[in-house]
Image: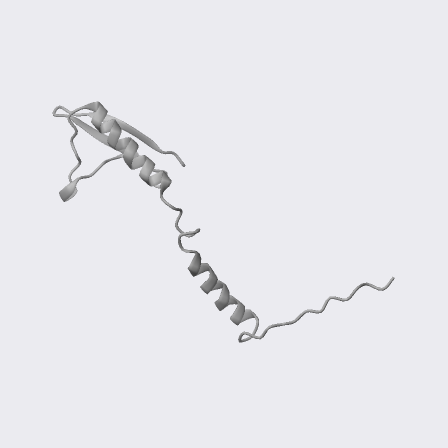
Length: 99
């Protein structure tokens, strides 16, 4: 399912900031240095981290669109060479219809 979620999960010694992206099947805690989940002192701090991470993810430029636009033109040039026979240009002349 294409769902995003974020919430604070209470622990005995603090709070985890949990985020779920559309590509994942379940929520994961925000990880810190060393690969361990970050433990926040308050629920508010955890929710601020959730908001920060979700907004960073959602506002990141879409890969394959305007970010990597050069690759599409390279692929198109290769396809045109293949189908047009080595880069030959086919000129088309338009004639008016006779009635």
